[in-house]
Image (tube, rainbow, N blue to C red; front, side, top):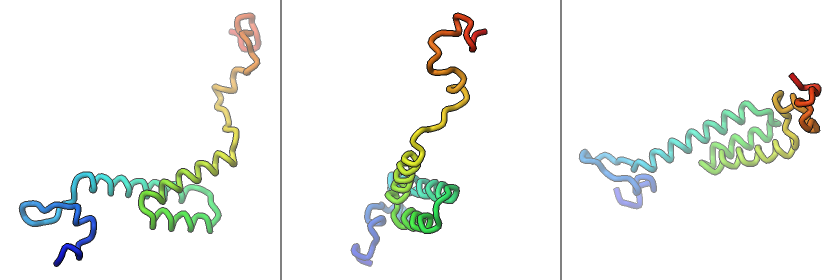
Length: 113
């Protein structure tokens, strides 16, 4: 077997004492992180409500374009969601005090104790 027959990942790897090819630590961690990112993107895609054509397109991109596919899905869909929902709903704690209330609590206003 010549050096041109080896894949790129094996070229960056080393051999241990028994002669087995061992990938460097940074490559193993990077592959695990890329796999986890792809898994998270697929899970988010399954839970989202997309038209079937868009969902199928995203599934192909996520699976076939490692690292950049899942990142693109999260970025593009976040931008799309924020564009379609410009004003986030406020939580109960934010709605309990009106914004035009300028200290009426001290004077026994509607929210006084």
